[in-house]
Image (cartoon, rainbow over all chains, first blue to last red; front, side, top):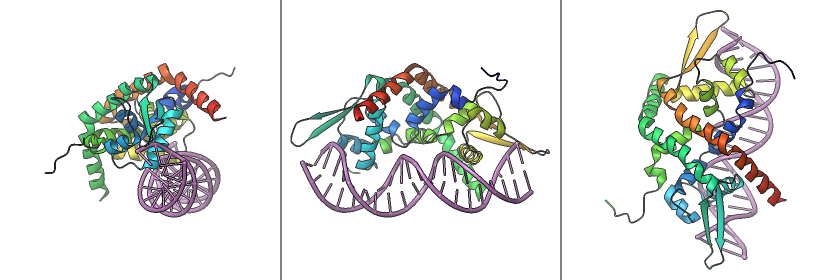
Length: 124
Length: 124
DNA sequence: CGGAATCCTATATGATACTG
DNA sequence: CAGTATCATATAGGATTCCG
């Protein structure tokens, strides 16, 4: 064992936190999880509710979430085909932290927009 | 006014939540904010503590955070040059939600890793 | 409908070198 | 040390088309 007078990088020490940040480090993951909060949804429903998301991108997002155990996929042998996505128990535990951000945004979103306006004005 | 029997897309309705998600929708924003939680830090300190971040990327990240009013930059007229970055009051309000994710990761991080392993195994 | 295939673009990130 | 410039690459995301 070597002696460390310096603190370990948080990159190493908080690698689990990095894991959580990475789960939300893209445009759509949190949005899709949040849209599933009330129960299972079909892809077409998700697209309607979210708006502005391409079918391909939605599929990729759902695959990512499935890969990380946050969402489950169920397909029914019907015609026309029907598929539903739902939060797993693990995915459901993430709703609390996500909601914390939603509340933060409701409370402080305007301040961010103001800061952006000031930055734009200062740049000119 | 048109009549809407369908719910408005959350993309539109929860646009402030999207704003908050976008603040964390990249690799480094949350990590840098979290590393500033105990007080002002110089770029070299941030690099040491975070680990694995390129100077250029750190600068870009700090510029983004400054643009959104979450971080402030102070430069001192010294030789060698010294610069410090600190959370603004607004940035400080974001520590709570970020910490919620850290706690989630500490509690459920292993489950995500397990899910990833299962997905990898199933793919083979 | 669900989703795969294809092509394209923008951006984030990474690596190196250089300036004040 | 702080920061920029320049290069390269990986990936997300967007748009279109087609299939079971």
